[in-house]
Amino acid sequence: MNLHEYQGKEILNSFGVEIQRGIVAQTADEAVEAAKKLTKETGTSWHVIKAQVHAGGRGKGGGVKLAKSLDDVKEIAGQIIGMNLITPQTSAEGKKVHQVLVAEDVYYPGDNEPEEYYMSVLLNRGSGKNMIMYSTEGGMDIEAVAEETPHLIFTEEIDPATGLLPFQARRIAFNLGLSGKSFKGMVKFVNSLYTAYIKSDSSLFEINPVLKTSDDRVIAVDAKVTLDDNALFRHKDYEALRDIREENPTEVEAKAVGLNYVDLDGNVGCMVNGAGLAMATMDLIKQAGGEPANFLDVGGTADAERVEAAFNLILKDPNVKAILVNIFGGIVRCDRVAQGIVDAYKNMGNIEVPIIVRLQGTNADIAKELIDNSGLDFHSAIEFQEAADKVQQLLS
Image (cartoon, rainbow, N blue to C red):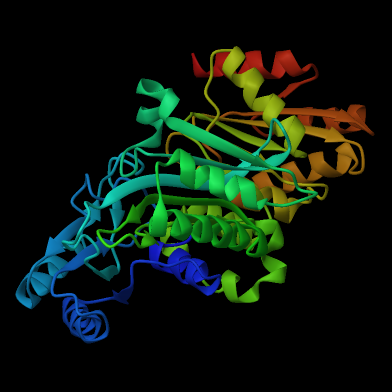
């Protein structure tokens, strides 16, 4: 589950990470009041207005702007709230901005020049260990840094048996070229950040930039946080932070009816039972020259109601030109699935795209008879490759 910047910062701050302070606002007038309150609390006279959407690159799309007066705050907030923000991480239509974060200006003058760093905490699936990735090149796309200057990216892997050790936090601060007050500040920052990552059951914490201010404070200026959905039962307060306005509506609907669905960009709808078989099905569709339009795992109970819900989800995508149903009858009997498919088709009326059905496993022969004798517009297949080839034949 993805969080907004302000929500991620609240979690960080609750574990002792120093953050750029801010107040979220839904309207331009609320933004002005937030700016007034921040001025009283922090003394800041300039404010940063940040669009709150689940996408990176907001500054490039005009979603992050500096306001030097209250009039600027009102004008900029009014421009950003309600806009469709287009960034490298959104679709061509962009995402509608419903709220902004009014934040303090932390790039104030002082004895030293502010410096920006990149830092993230995530799981290294190759080693099975958590990893802190960091760089002196903060504020930039880390992908570009990795491609153009890979020697400027450092990693620190953490043994799950020991956790983050003191020397590792010190090594991070050293590699970032810090000393004195900022060195101690970074050590504290790293320890608190890793604690937040572990105790919040997150799968990603990305802070870009981590800022060393002109007076050597170390603070999080941004926060991209992804929580592990499987651990939300332990964090009911975090679960309440979910903003379904930022999520794909079809995926939200699928979750509500208990289906595992991920929207993709292709033209072949997939209905499969089991995540592994679903992945293999998508691979085979691509190998046959097609493009999967979705990942859809109907699970072990493929009755008529569940199949109908799955068909409806797939057909919401106007790009779908064919549907491949690929079910292995292990726990669930193939004849029951076949009957569910027939009943769902009849309940929905005429489905205008071709449906290829492959059922293998328990009672597969009975299932094939049900499909072939239904009198409905189905194309049955026995072999995996045969099913994928039929999809491509029907599309061409």
